[in-house]
Length: 198
Image (cartoon, rainbow, N blue to C red; front, side, top):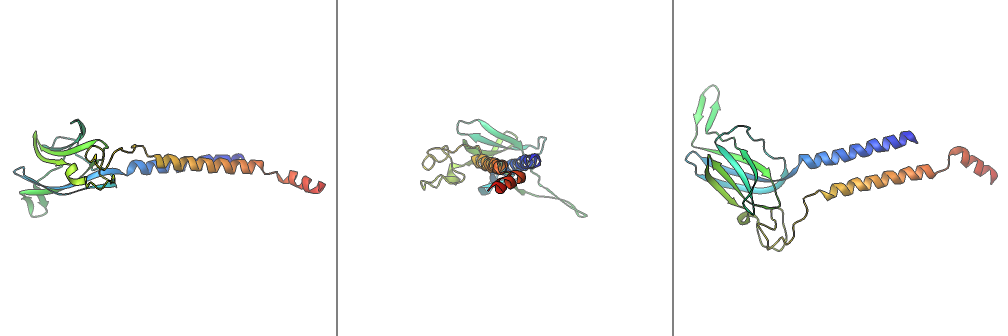
């Protein structure tokens, strides 16, 4: 019985760890694809909401950055961008380009309003998310929230992953039930003596 209990506890721990690890690896993100020109013109080619991992950003100042703004203008997220207009082709050398295309994945926030890209302190792209995600169909779709689409999203669901808590709780209930069923079953010796007296 002790071995079964230890096995059940280890199994439960591994299951919960795996569920939360998956929840932490994948998250809801905005994926932005944009063309950046050397003269600071930009062209947004795609913006979408998906479950993925956020981009890896440079740790030092590259001259380009991205900021995610809340509905009240606060910066929710800020990182440098790896923007380069040089293409290294060995053995031909470096080719200098007039434009470059980048794909960026930034975290999704429930109170996000806009996303902007900067070259130094100059804003070169301003994305008003209400223009891209508010379809006004009375359904709070992925990418919409109460700030960019109040017509569809009257209340915003909590960001906590309740589904994972539910899965974990169900596993605990199943393991506890199995434990008590095994414990309440009579041992072989007791069962033989009961049958003998019958």
